[in-house]
Length: 114
Length: 112
Image (cartoon, rainbow over all chains, first blue to last red):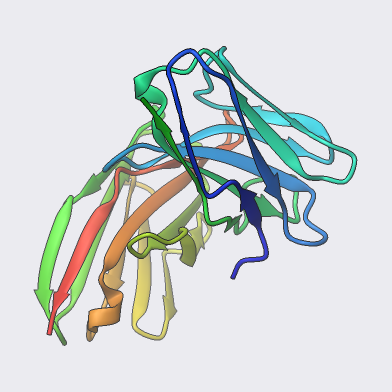
């Protein structure tokens, strides 16, 4: 157990809908990262927050957004969902601002868009 | 300059043999190279990492080598065991994007 929690574990929804994925980092970690892992694909970096501020942005679609709250938990919002958005979404956390250090991954949320 | 090329995509070895996975990159600004292991249905976990100021790092049966001139780094697992079976991802820290870029993964199967 990495200490990073994600909810829900599974999510099934329809095209065009909107969902929110939630992540709580390890105690004391200020950085939260979001990744998308499609079937048989690697990990695609989406976005990073550090202490409430956006720090780095990757291949995140305009339909997706995220934020980090004062208690440091983070939410990833996915809207106007398409079939291709079906994937495993991981969040990870680290103590430092830079991803030049170990990241601790949560168990992931499996999103299925029908 | 963003991609990390990882080979092979699948690797099957006999228990006790060695396994080598190689990654190449093109951005010379990369300076941190971690390796993550993802067992089936589980989360990725860091197993070893190397920074650009060293050429090799070892941790028991696992080692990573880095050749900055040739822009490639490799994971070496010796005396493989069935519990080493997993998908292994290499990554590099992209100083421009300030984020990790991951390879596409290598599925390692260790046959008992």
